[in-house]
Image (cartoon, rainbow, N blue to C red; front, top):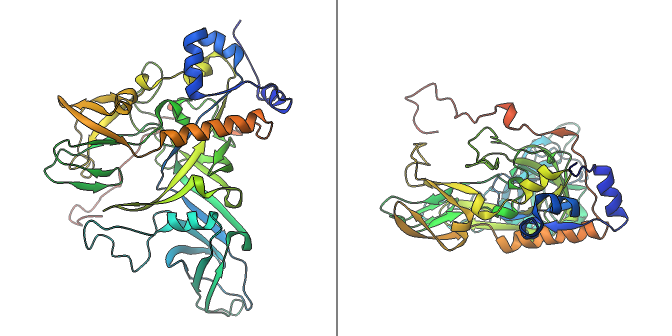
Amino acid sequence: MGIERTYEEINQKIRSGKAVVLTAEEVVELVAEKGVAGAAAKVDVVTTGTFGPMCSSGLFLNFGHPKPRIKMNEVYLNTVPAYAGVAAVDAYLGATALPPGDPRNRNHPGEFLYGGGHVIEDLVAGKEIRLEAFGYGTDCYPLKKIETTFRLSEINEATLYNPRNAYQNYSVAVNLGQKTIYTYMGILKPRLGNANYSSAGQLSPLLNDPLLKTIGIGTRIFLGGGRGYVAWHGTQHNPSVERGENEVPKTSAATIAVVGDLKQMHWRWLRGLSFLGYGATLQVGLGIPIPILNEEIMQYCAVKDEEIFAPVVDFSRDYPYREERDLGLVSYAELKSGSVKICDREVPTASLSSYAGAREIATTLKEWIMAGNFTLTRPVAPLPSVEAGIKLQPLPQRNPHRGGI
């Protein structure tokens, strides 16, 4: 009879200080030593982590009403625009937002020195933020302009809500063209000069639960150094892709939308980034605890870098113009070795995400659980999985003469 546990049993062990918790990195060694059944009998929770750039991130803010009241129609935070079409003094600040005066790529490659992700980092670091807002004036909201400064602790709410985080696997970016290109996967040298990737591999949250058997709506997570939750499946969630025998997807697949209170978070795990020639974004620290309910879950958590494969994609032509070309698959073990063979060439590799950061997140989450400070939540609803048959669709272009979008 195999091991069977419930969330309630695991949480009781957490509260009593008896839970056995390992990181996804540590559990690989334990399974090698004791086998899946032996490891499942011993371990209650496996912790995961990832710390990389996640463009689809942002922040809902409620500033509170000044005297007299204002209905904000335009909002700028340290000159970076936030979307004000929510309510009178609510706004959403996107991680990739740029100030109106930023030169963008007019002088290519642009530097993008300060954007929405940097504002979020400054907020959570407790720095003073300059608010400039404009309204058109109504009978109930007569004020038309306000300029002031505030700190995170001085406003009503700041809710991190990221529509797409923690991609389950991702492409390896290369450049088969004749000139250097600047992308969201970093700077890519011509003629296969380098290969960039962005995943924690064997520590990555969704790769340790490839069929989303324990991760769903309501799962409590490590988010930005605080506690957060899985709110929904993420945008571009695409579980119906080719998978290996271990059920790990061979390309970009599932994503999650996450939510949490920014006031509980730490700037160490929310960092504004500038990508030369591309734009601004936010580096997000995220970790998910996986309850070992049975041996099947343990088998998934024992996945190793050499068992996880990612597709190689040309960003000079194939990616921007949606052209299909098979450049093969490479394992994360190969990627992390420092070089990988592509098109019969040895190509140096580099990661945009921090494996050291992912390890620290998984270890911190482990410590929280072992101290009894973090219990697990049973999802209130599952995320769409392979059975849902979801496949990504391109944007319809019904007027072929319209030109670029």
